[in-house]
Structure formats: structure tokens, C-alpha cells
Image (cartoon, rainbow, N blue to C red; front, side):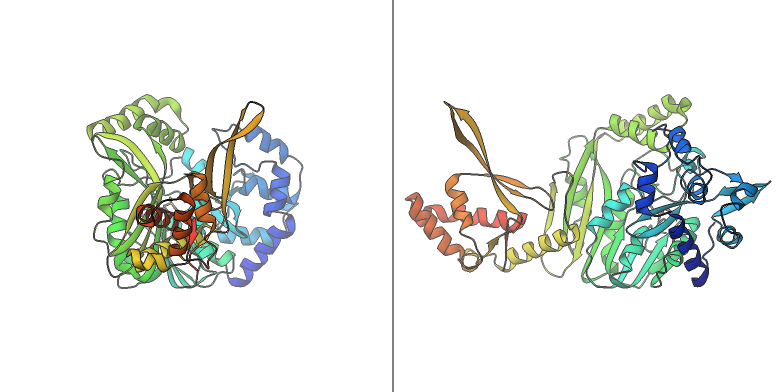
Length: 487
Ligand SMILES: C[S@@+](CC[C@H](N)C(=O)[O-])C[C@H]1O[C@@H](n2cnc3c(N)ncnc32)[C@H](O)[C@@H]1O
């Protein structure tokens, strides 16, 4: 396990890594695509070749990137004795028979140097492996609502990666994990990065924070839906998706009014159920507004194959493992497995629950997008009558764009389709008629919905009473999706 260093020693070690060039920019340059060593990618030979020159940086790379032991004597030629001693004291290295072997991987994320286990821990089947900064952690970090939080909880902290980021906008962060090795690792990383407002606690789900409440809860829990629970970091040990359900059911009690809980999750779709049914049940009577953004869907066959590939490198047991997975899904009637981001906001009153499939690869500031989406629902709720909505003067979002698709007809471009599209956040789009496009561009933040409808009715040569219901329904939909915003 890693041992947190003193503030002074942590600073010395961090500075040493920086001076040696073990930083994000140099690593990218030095290692090309800077991909992690992986049996699956078969890139070990290339990375070994890249790091073959005997230099201080290559010594560090071979330990903390490639996960390779090195002879103590040759390492000592490149690493000063004081820093070597600190690495041993921290548990980053272990001495064995003239060799120094790495006990952690060190990656950069958002300006932090983050220790975790190396992916080879999967090959070694270490149940208590601590996950490295990976695409799921980074994805959730992008969604985090980064406004001031009096107290933030990072449930299932692993390396502490989400806590390190949250510490910048939180008065205090509590990071929890069931895995003692993760607890030590998160403590180590907070110290290594001179982050002082993170408290790390061990325990199951919300047990370590009984009686406390938070403005923000972040969780990237072990959500894999698999028949076994081999690894703490990824395998949900409960029936199907029940761990995620449990967090959704229990989480609201730990939120302050107006506080957000944001988590990644997977849920099963059972035979004859609509895809959203299970996750909708989780969200009944939580006292929270909720937005579920469904991403990738996989059928059980694809899912089993991916999960087996991600959690084992030894192919000899593949047939038996695949049969076990498929038996588990078939027995329970699982027809699909969905993944997504789930956001809840505790609010007294009648809550909304929005569950939808979203376009892939969102861009821009996703925390802002979450806040503005919940604000849009508030605006609609506060102006739920037609009379109130008619008095609003919304404006088109700055990142809304109108696209025209044309096709060639007799040597001319003929307009075929108009699409209103968002260029940041989720790339939602909606097809428009030209008259409707004119109706929308009138929304500049000064004209009321009533005035815009009047103008539209006059242009269309239709009575207001006839067009108004459809126009209002369109305004509601476009506010909800973020095309129109309140001023
Ligand atoms: C997918 S990893 C995420 C780690 C880190 N937050 C990240 O995003 O990289 C899930 C973490 O949840 C922890 N965990 C698993 N079961 C738990 C439980 N019942 N209560 C608290 N933490 C748990 C695991 O040990 C692991 O560190």
C-alpha cells in the first residue's frame, strides 16, 4: 500500500518528477500516442524501444509507466539517492534482490500526478486493484457541476481522481471507498498534489458519511453487470444493476436541498420491458429532479465479450466464462445493457424525471450544460401556464446553429432540409420548416413569445388561435433542450 508523504517530501518528489520531464507534455512527445502498455494492444515492444536510452526520464517511465522492475545499481546512476529513498518510503517502489520494482503507476490528469495500480494488476487478478485515471473517470469529471460546494462526496474514490478535481471548488471533499488500498492511494494522491481539503474514509457506500449532507455527490461506482465479483473496482456484487439502484435510492438522503448527485451507471433491460423502465423505477419518489442520459447500448453477447476482454488477458478460460455470462443473462431475461450518466438534484415539490438517449461525444463545459438544463426545467415549471409562457422573452442559445441541406436539381442547389443544431454540449438537433426557422430567429431576448407568435401567424396567414398551441409546444421543447434560453 502507498504511504502518504509529509508535505515537504511530497513537494520534493513532485518537483523531481517535473524536472525530469515526467509531465503530460513531455510524455506525449516522448511516447507518441502515450498509450498505456497493454497486452491487448501489444505495444510493449514499442514502448520498451522508446525508453531504451539510459536516462533519468526513461528510468521513471520504465517503472511508473511500463511497470517494469529495474536493477538498483543502474537506477541509482540516474535517480538521486534522496529521491530514491522517498520513492521507497512512499511505497512507490519495493526493493527485492538487487532490483527495484514499481508498486504503482503514475499518470497525469488535469494537472495532477495520480498514482494507481498498473493495468498488469488485472493480469495478476488482484481483486483489490485500484483503478487508474481511465476514460470513465475522465468522462464523469467532465460532467461535474463545478460551482462552489460546501461539501462534496466522492463515493468509490479509487485513486481519488475525482476528489482532486473537486477540491478546487469545494470547501471540503469526503472521499470514500470500500477498498483499503484505494483509501491509502487516495490519501497518498491528495498529499502528493498538495490538496489539503480531502478527507478519505473507508467503508461501504454511504456508511462512512452517515448523518452528513453534501452539495455535490460524485460516483463512478463498480457498475459492471456480470455473474461474478472478481474485482472491487468494476464488478457490481449485487444482482444485475442493483448497486446503482441502491446508490440512487439512498443518495438523496445525503444531499442538501439544491444539491446534485452525479453518477455513471449501467442498467439492464429485461424481456418485454421498454429500455427506460428499470432506471425509471429507481427514480420514483426520490425527492429529486433527475436527468438520465443514455449512451451506449449493447446486447448481452457484445457486452459479455467486452467485459471478458477488459477483465482478463488469459484466453484459456474464455469459453467457460462466456457460457457463464450468457447463462446469467438468459436466466434473468436480459435483452440489453444500457450505460449512461445519471444526474439528480434534490428539490422539494413536484419533481421531473427526464430519461432520454443523447447524441455521442458531448463537447464543451458539461457541468455548465447540466446546470443550464436543470435551470431550463425550472423556467418551464415556473411558467407552466400558457399565459405565463406567452409573456417570456427567451433568446436563441449562442451555440445554436441553423444548417441547410441542399441537393442539386437542374444545375441549381435546392433546399431539402433545415436543421437547428447545438454546437456544444450534446449535439441535439431538430428539423425545421423555413417559416418555423424565421419564427425562432425572432427570439433575441427582447421579443415575447406572444409577439413572435403574432408575427408568425401573420406571415403564415393563419389565425393565432390555430398556430398558438403548436408554437407553444415547440417553445417548451426547445427550452427543455437548450435551444432557447431564459434571459
Ligand atoms: C470504477 S471505480 C472508480 C474509481 C474512481 N472514482 C475513478 O473514477 O477512477 C469504483 C470504485 O468504487 C469502489 N467500491 C466498490 N464497491 C464499493 C462500495 N460498496 N462502497 C464504496 N466503494 C466501493 C471500488 O473499490 C473502486 O475504487
